[in-house]
Length: 443
Image (tube, rainbow, N blue to C red):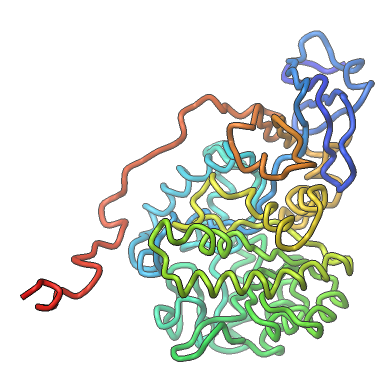
């Protein structure tokens, strides 16, 4: 018999999250941080003190797992803001403020693979200790880069650290930094395999296979998985050959890279959301038309290969890259499912699995223990108005969330949406958006 603190979700349509079709109506019994029963036995096991939630006419499904979220970035509009307008203490406070928005949007678990300073593990521990309200979290530390840099170009220093980056100069430093990050609590080691160079189009591969293996071998020896930012075909192939566990983007993946991914058994989180937001809505927030066409082309070039990877048995995870001005926290975590359906061609049930059961990898939990509605699984659940198995866009509207249950406890969805004013010096201040020439002034 279940005691005080237990929840009984009554009469909902159960969407398991493992790719199988919804069934019901049915009951789900939660006690503590575990689902105790699903189906007829749930009501039988429920004691008199159990709290009952009427889910009739709604869908009961696992909470979303966002496998690519930058919770410490604070929604910058540029690399300048990210690198030069975020001091350590302010970034920590803002991250603690922002992380609650994920729960309010139905995200009950996320991976923060790289962070400003060393804030990721600290925030994770604060959430687990009940100091900060937030979803389950796994955390990396600074992304490892070579001196050739990353997506921030020359803002990346030739050595040392800046913002989310730690530049490693040789194999010995790669090994030493990997060990240090694990010592300080990193759940994942992130490698920025590609980056941008002046006067070169696209992102180039910045690591050799031997350099990558120095990190992956060291991390794996210490029981820690690796994740890699890869935005061209060669980097995806090298990352797979080096033993990276999760590849972000896999942009422009070709047949050779796909074969390496399949052989290695690694997973992919394509993270189309940032690109899709810029392509579809960038003009509404002042993005340049050149960027729009560039990112739309990247989606088109990559989506077919992601589908091929899925069909070959590669695990596909859902990630939003929330944390930038184009992907603010709490707004776009479910959009990746829409793109997986519309551009990649997955069914709604397949896309939902990417954001639920498949996300067990991101949280470093065993399959079947999270991201599913099943006996013995973690008690992270949503009660949703509508049928996401037919229309995944339902999950992108917070108004459709009737209940969010995190670790067996109800999240207060009736509170006002968290809002704040900009902090002093947080945003880039511009004197003008173009030069005031005499011609522009009409003189």
